[in-house]
Length: 600
Ligand SMILES: Nc1ncnc2c1ncn2[C@@H]1O[C@H](COP(=O)(O)OP(=O)(O)OP(=O)(O)O)[C@@H](O)[C@H]1O
Ligand SMILES: [Mg+2]
Image (cartoon, rainbow, N blue to C red; front, side):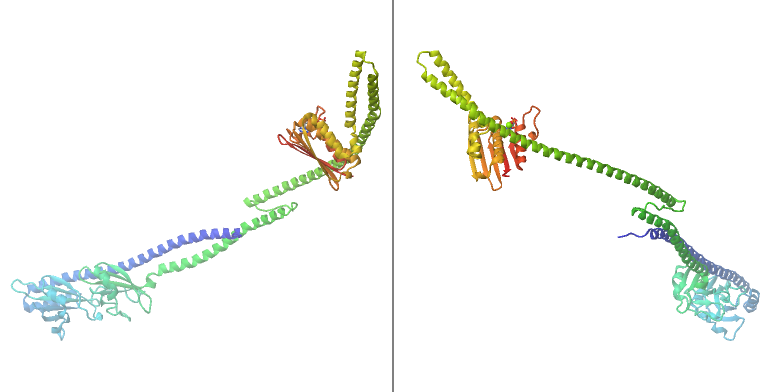
């Protein structure tokens, strides 16, 4: 399978790097956004703290004022009490109402006075009742009532008298009445609003705008934070609108605290803006980088492609067109090296072609020379064969003539002399002993000479060859020549002997003669088997001994001593008649000479 193209690899690599880079930056951006969110939450908490602090300070200050007023009131007579309280009310200005309570908690009167003074609602408040049991000053959270009432706290202080319990003064503090703006964040500016909540998260006071929160709006979400008694922030999920960020800070002076609330959109406007900007810029930057990576890959790959096609052209044998890459970088260098390679390759190919042509020329010349020599050799061979044939037939003729002459003349003459000698010997009187003896010796010598001459005649040309045929001549020759060496002869003939006549028969005889002579002289055999098989087209002769054997491979040419011509002569003779000689021999396995000679 073909791998990804270089262009994809480069672009992919660059893109992968970019994606990693963007991921890291994205992570950092998310961290920054998270931090911005934390900062935004902290800021809301700080606002709540400032508001809560202001309320705390106001309460402490007001409690102190009421304590002082109580001292002053207690110092006077009971008749003067109401006037003193009314003066204090006017002087202090912070209280919405000041209630004079009896020692048992009953309402005696209220400044400013109201028609239903006796039914002061806070009198039923359990916290107020608890405060009435103590001594000193307490800040009491208002009972859960109407948030529009704005009642922030009730300050209860006892009227100390030495002789008897004198009751209490209770000052109501309302957000709307206080000189100080307790909820400093008006609802109209942005989406931030502040509320005062009691110890259960119930709204006690809130800005007077067109869209007040339900009193129990935050009870559920603020519960866990308030129960910890520590400041905290949370998100208020609104069903049909944007979620709200809520920051709560508790009062020091009494249970409850200030809640600062803002829509999430407004609170996190910077992080969200950052998020959107990052996303848009990130996507645009990634798109631009991708295109840039792709173009970059293209500019790198284009010259490489060109180089590749040039190299392919070179591979297909076009070494004439130059390779040009007009660049000064590594690819340009590669192109230049390629071109150098092309030039060198071309030169070396031309050189090789020259050499090949030269070589071919020389080979042609040599071939012609060899052919010429071969022709000469063939002619020489033919002449040699003709000469050999002539020599052999001349030799045979000469042997025949010599044998005939020896037989007809010398042997006849010697026979006649021998007979004459015998006659003379017989005719000699018995007296001259020496003469008889000498004659006797001469006769023996003559008989010896005659035997030798007869043997020579047979060797030269056994008359049996002409008279009795090849088989008989071969058998006689073998028997006579092997017997003196104590070698037994087994002779067999098969086929029609009449088929082999003339020169072919003579050749077979001469070969048998040589084989028998070798067996006698070299083999040391005890037995020699000779077989003649007169087949339909050729006579196959086998001379097999059980002697020492030899290595025939060493006798394909004559020895320096002049020996070794016998085996060669056999082959020459056989080949002259279109036949062949096989010699099987080896140390200890005996020797088999097999000759096949066609009839004509
Ligand atoms: N039947 C055999 N058994 C063992 N050795 C043989 C036999 N025939 C040939 N050889 C070995 O092969 C050699 C070559 O034989 P070859 O007939 O060519 O030469 P030669 O007999 O030595 O001499 P000549 O030329 O007189 O025949 C011999 O010298 C002999 O060592
Ligand atoms: Mg020999």
